[in-house]
Image (cartoon, helix red, strand yellow):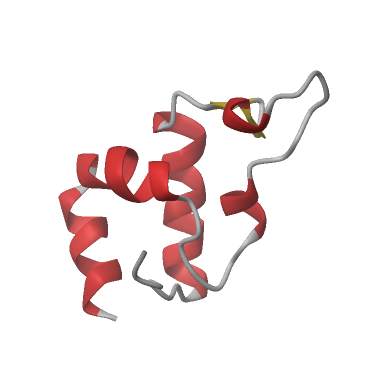
Length: 73
């Protein structure tokens, strides 16, 4: 997976998109990591780059402007 870097402004936009548009994010916890305990979404606590393949492939394309800004860095 390509390592896409984020600045503070982009991280804020990514976090908002995750909280509002990711079906695997429930109350800031990642359902893909659910093992009976809550696990905060790793992408919400990684301000420097995109680490979640699901976000990159399934959520980010829903915001073309943000996707373009991130891939241009």
